[in-house]
Image (cartoon, rainbow, N blue to C red):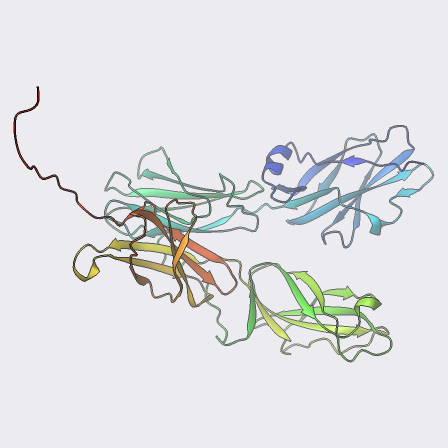
Amino acid sequence: MRKPSVFVWCLLAGALTAAVARAQEPGVIYFQHRQFKIPFKNDQKGLNVAQVRLYVSTEQGRRWQFTANALPDEPSFRFATPNDGSFWFAVQTVDTLGKTYPDKVEELKPSLKVIVDTLPPTIQLQPLQPRVTEVGVAWLVRDDNLDTTLPDSVRVEYRIVGNPAWIPLAVPAGTNQVYWNPQTNAQVEVRVMARDRAGNVGEEKTTVSLQAGGGANAFQNPIQQPFDGPKDLPRKFVNSKQISVGFDLKDVGPSGVSSVELWYTLYKGRAWNKLTEYPLEQKNAEPGQSKRLTFDVQDEGVYGITLVAKSGVGLGERPPQPGDAPQFWIEVDLTKPVVQLKGVHVGDTGLDKGKLSIVWAAFDKNLGPTPIRLSYAEQKDGPWTTFADKLGNGGKHIWTLPQELPFQFFLRVEAFDRAGNVGEAITSDRVKVDLSLPKAVPLDIGPGAR
């Protein structure tokens, strides 16, 4: 006997094409509304399907909740959520005899994954110090669902103050600053727009000019506020909201270990919260075997983590109490350093001849002691050759140019924070290191050949 089944897909109020185009993970749809229809189609005509049930999971399939039902000839389910998040959907059919397929809820497999995101990206925009004929801006975009590889993820436009038309600037994917010649000494208005995978758009504006560093929106350090705890607080840095922890078991009795609870507290907080409980099968509960558990956090920050094991009869150490120190600290840092390339100068006389001077500024709350790497490339998209690595963030480096160097190239400054986030700045034009001025010297003068 064939099992009744239902083919389910998501129209999302007509936005399927745009949503799928922005989906980085196959089968995942990003959507900017909290209410939508989920059309379905009974592809097993002739079988005795009496009812179709829709289940949703907000825990990546670990648990399922019944959320709607429909007759097999109805066109769609309706779904609504009070909050953003990741939602997995699965269906269960019921035949006329009351038999369900699949038989158990635990056997459900997701047929649709939707990330609901109604929040636009946040943007910090900073005017840069003008060059001889160029103005510049740097920006920092924050959004959980931003994909900088998409062509319209970040747009930079400018206009002379008072003019209605915006002029787009060509900005390579992944960069966070740009210089250009505005062809005017007047005030120039600049706006940066960022679009996330769900289609939400954030916008920020500032003004720049060749006469000054920028308008009222200028800021010195756009990065997060530094951690205000002790600098020597031992903690592991991670650049993901999903965290994996390895652990082992000790003092295991004859009943074994049934589960491990994960408790967390925030830095400067006294309260403890149980995030989740991980059941352990007997074969995985033996001491001396490396085990791992994975959990998710909501935001950046410093978290204290403590694991509590429970025996097979439910006994274990007491959960952490208010004020207890955690077993270890984790700092979640998702923000890339902001790097500003302030100047590149090729020496042509005296002691500076044959040397390249690079001046930059890098900002991040978690920069290490040697976070800077310098490299060059003949093309703006690489390949890049490193010529100085693990430099301190002193803001200046003098490079004695090797003879085999190309006569012009792009230069890149990268900053690495302790969590592994990387920010960069690349020169807008090639640096010309061949400063020779060729001369033509006449040797003789005579009549031309006829």
